[in-house]
Image 1: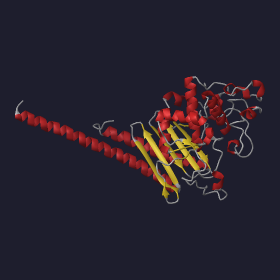
Image 2: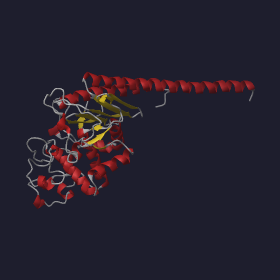
Image 3: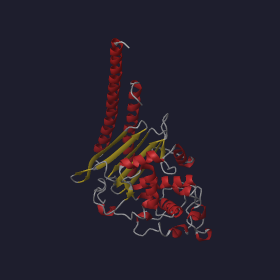
Image 4: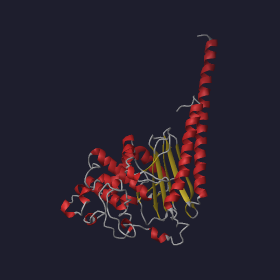
Length: 382
């Protein structure tokens, strides 16, 4: 090869290499722009609602990962993305994931009868209780009678776990599967069935499940004695007293007793839900179809949100005094996000949905931003 040919070849090679560097830099800049737009959207949602602290994490199908923390964990201590917060009823997602895995392995099929899972005889249970299946409990359609006053799992001496036979000795309020009626007790019974099937405490069952999917994480049973995070009273309720925020976390474990960072919970949801799992969740019958607004009956774990022309979004919220927790995952796997805050409102359902909508719009804008910019720059690897 002549010297001239080698010289020209070298220029071409340098041009290609330099072009690759330019494209990589451009790709990084575009990713940074989309992510910063999302962070600004989340900050605005938190600040406009005067939240003391908010964690947010989003995982996108492109591999992009966005996380941030806004506000304070306690006075003078900024909230970080590594500070675990209570996840309230997002704990039901963990119980549900463990139940879906037990169904797939055959250890505890969703159509198993609860009394068989708990080794109870039909003669010992109340009318109708022998017909409750694990699926009915997960879908809040067990027919269990609700007790008056404070939810039983939040009381000092709840009957579940430990005295579940007493609960099932009572007649059902209605036939299993007949009607959706939210039940923390139902999830407590699922937790007992899982513990018995695995021959291990529920905390270990869920801990092992989490470790298999994402390895070491912040996800654990909440310690009510922790002072690392200040949980704030509802600003619209003068009677709200932070002294009430200490619950029987061992009793409410399956329904609301865990803590995590938004990042780790988003990682778990992203890793643990496959296409089959999400199909199983969308089971709301005609009786549960939404008439107005966003909130609908849960499937096995999530609400289902549909918009014309868009894939379904499965979403879940949680609320305890001092805690707001939200999570969403799209049916097509486009994105998963989690938001956790150390305050709630008295009208928590409507308020949660307002925050959900704001964060969901930010997630959709991020998805559109990453998709559009990748398409307009064909040289960017994607």
